[in-house]
Length: 67
Ligand code: SF4
Ligand code: SF4
Image 1 (tube, rainbow, N blue to C red):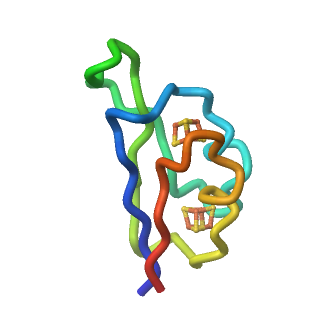
Image 2: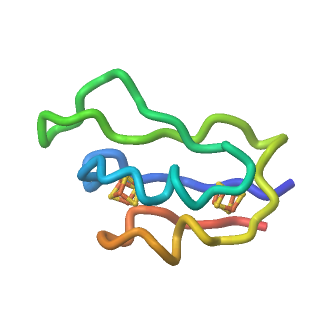
Image 3: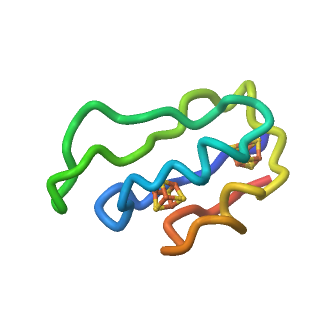
């Protein structure tokens, strides 16, 4: 089952990954990261289809996709 990992302390909260995910599998994390902002988090392995759009669009290379 596809899944992603997100380096939450590198994430700058731009939400580009949230906007491109066709499955709604990435959501805002309410806990602040080390940069003092709300990063994103992976919501559901069941939803992710491994398309890698999130990893491709992330400007800070925070996301890795596993299929
Ligand atoms: S790999 Fe695709 S489906 Fe999975 S979280 Fe990223 S954008 Fe969404
Ligand atoms: S695209 Fe990258 S930096 Fe922007 S919210 Fe998603 S993981 Fe964070």
